[in-house]
Length: 144
Image (cartoon, rainbow, N blue to C red; front, side, top):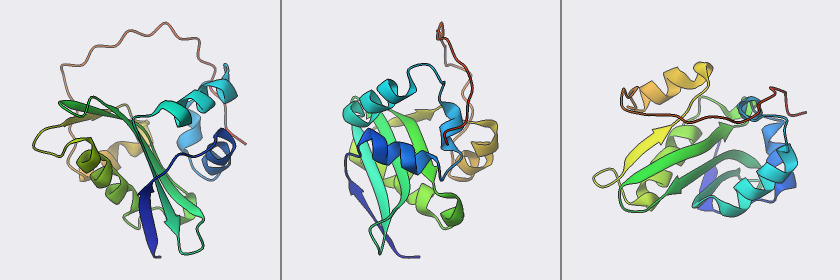
Protein backbone atom coordinates (compact mmCIF):
# COMPACT_ATOMS: atom_id res chain seq x y z
CA UNK A 1 0.00 0.00 0.00
CA UNK A 2 1.25 3.47 -0.82
CA UNK A 3 0.91 6.11 1.85
CA UNK A 4 2.16 9.58 2.72
CA UNK A 5 3.06 10.93 6.15
CA UNK A 6 2.48 14.59 6.94
CA UNK A 7 2.22 16.88 9.92
CA UNK A 8 -1.51 17.35 10.32
CA UNK A 9 -3.95 18.12 13.12
CA UNK A 10 -6.95 15.83 13.32
CA UNK A 11 -10.24 16.77 14.93
CA UNK A 12 -11.34 14.82 17.99
CA UNK A 13 -14.06 13.14 15.91
CA UNK A 14 -11.56 12.08 13.22
CA UNK A 15 -9.23 10.66 15.84
CA UNK A 16 -12.00 8.79 17.66
CA UNK A 17 -13.12 7.23 14.34
CA UNK A 18 -9.50 6.21 13.73
CA UNK A 19 -9.25 4.67 17.21
CA UNK A 20 -12.23 2.43 16.44
CA UNK A 21 -10.16 0.81 13.66
CA UNK A 22 -7.12 0.15 15.88
CA UNK A 23 -6.21 -1.44 19.20
CA UNK A 24 -4.84 1.90 20.42
CA UNK A 25 -8.07 3.09 22.01
CA UNK A 26 -7.71 0.63 24.88
CA UNK A 27 -4.96 2.84 26.34
CA UNK A 28 -7.45 5.55 27.31
CA UNK A 29 -9.66 5.73 30.40
CA UNK A 30 -13.41 6.25 30.10
CA UNK A 31 -13.28 9.32 32.37
CA UNK A 32 -13.74 12.55 30.35
CA UNK A 33 -12.71 10.65 27.19
CA UNK A 34 -13.99 13.08 24.53
CA UNK A 35 -12.77 16.16 26.41
CA UNK A 36 -9.29 14.69 26.86
CA UNK A 37 -9.05 13.48 23.25
CA UNK A 38 -9.93 17.01 22.12
CA UNK A 39 -7.07 18.38 24.21
CA UNK A 40 -4.68 15.71 22.93
CA UNK A 41 -5.28 16.36 19.22
CA UNK A 42 -5.11 20.11 19.75
CA UNK A 43 -1.98 20.31 21.89
CA UNK A 44 0.43 17.47 20.98
CA UNK A 45 3.78 19.02 20.04
CA UNK A 46 3.95 16.95 16.86
CA UNK A 47 0.97 15.37 15.11
CA UNK A 48 1.65 13.01 12.19
CA UNK A 49 -0.91 11.30 10.00
CA UNK A 50 -0.25 8.55 7.44
CA UNK A 51 -2.83 8.50 4.65
CA UNK A 52 -3.33 6.03 1.84
CA UNK A 53 -3.75 6.96 -1.83
CA UNK A 54 -7.47 7.60 -1.18
CA UNK A 55 -6.57 10.08 1.61
CA UNK A 56 -7.94 7.69 4.26
CA UNK A 57 -6.10 7.59 7.58
CA UNK A 58 -3.84 4.54 7.85
CA UNK A 59 -1.80 5.58 10.90
CA UNK A 60 -1.31 8.31 13.49
CA UNK A 61 1.59 9.30 15.73
CA UNK A 62 1.59 12.05 18.38
CA UNK A 63 4.56 13.20 20.41
CA UNK A 64 5.36 15.76 23.05
CA UNK A 65 8.85 17.19 23.00
CA UNK A 66 11.08 20.07 24.05
CA UNK A 67 12.85 19.88 20.64
CA UNK A 68 16.18 19.86 22.50
CA UNK A 69 16.58 16.72 24.61
CA UNK A 70 13.55 14.46 24.83
CA UNK A 71 10.51 13.16 23.01
CA UNK A 72 7.61 11.18 24.43
CA UNK A 73 5.45 9.21 22.01
CA UNK A 74 1.94 9.61 23.38
CA UNK A 75 0.14 7.77 20.61
CA UNK A 76 1.13 5.45 17.78
CA UNK A 77 -1.49 3.47 15.94
CA UNK A 78 -2.09 1.85 12.59
CA UNK A 79 -5.47 0.59 11.41
CA UNK A 80 -5.75 -3.15 11.83
CA UNK A 81 -5.71 -4.06 8.11
CA UNK A 82 -2.50 -2.05 7.56
CA UNK A 83 -0.34 -3.38 10.40
CA UNK A 84 2.93 -5.06 9.42
CA UNK A 85 3.51 -2.77 6.42
CA UNK A 86 6.11 -0.47 8.01
CA UNK A 87 3.76 2.46 8.61
CA UNK A 88 4.33 2.55 12.38
CA UNK A 89 8.10 2.38 11.95
CA UNK A 90 8.04 5.25 9.45
CA UNK A 91 5.79 7.36 11.67
CA UNK A 92 8.19 6.94 14.61
CA UNK A 93 11.21 7.71 12.41
CA UNK A 94 9.64 10.94 11.12
CA UNK A 95 8.49 11.93 14.62
CA UNK A 96 12.04 11.49 15.93
CA UNK A 97 13.47 13.53 13.04
CA UNK A 98 10.99 16.39 13.54
CA UNK A 99 11.74 16.52 17.28
CA UNK A 100 15.47 16.99 16.60
CA UNK A 101 16.94 13.70 15.41
CA UNK A 102 18.42 10.57 16.94
CA UNK A 103 21.71 12.26 17.79
CA UNK A 104 19.98 14.89 19.98
CA UNK A 105 16.70 13.46 21.24
CA UNK A 106 16.03 10.63 23.70
CA UNK A 107 12.70 9.00 22.88
CA UNK A 108 10.36 7.47 25.48
CA UNK A 109 6.91 5.92 25.46
CA UNK A 110 4.55 3.87 27.62
CA UNK A 111 3.29 0.82 25.80
CA UNK A 112 0.58 -1.77 25.92
CA UNK A 113 2.04 -5.22 26.58
CA UNK A 114 1.05 -6.33 23.05
CA UNK A 115 3.10 -3.50 21.50
CA UNK A 116 6.39 -4.33 23.23
CA UNK A 117 7.70 -6.52 20.36
CA UNK A 118 7.16 -3.66 17.88
CA UNK A 119 9.09 -1.16 19.99
CA UNK A 120 11.89 -3.64 20.64
CA UNK A 121 12.10 -4.33 16.90
CA UNK A 122 12.64 -0.61 16.16
CA UNK A 123 15.44 -0.50 18.74
CA UNK A 124 13.81 0.79 21.91
CA UNK A 125 14.77 -0.72 25.27
CA UNK A 126 13.14 -0.83 28.71
CA UNK A 127 14.65 1.83 30.97
CA UNK A 128 15.31 1.41 34.66
CA UNK A 129 15.45 5.15 35.33
CA UNK A 130 11.85 6.29 34.81
CA UNK A 131 9.64 7.43 37.65
CA UNK A 132 5.85 7.67 37.56
CA UNK A 133 3.38 9.73 39.61
CA UNK A 134 -0.12 8.50 38.87
CA UNK A 135 -3.24 9.49 40.80
CA UNK A 136 -5.56 9.33 37.78
CA UNK A 137 -8.96 7.68 37.98
CA UNK A 138 -8.86 5.10 35.20
CA UNK A 139 -11.73 2.93 34.02
CA UNK A 140 -10.77 0.69 31.08
CA UNK A 141 -13.08 0.60 28.09
CA UNK A 142 -13.08 -0.05 24.35
CA UNK A 143 -13.57 2.80 21.88
CA UNK A 144 -16.50 1.76 19.70
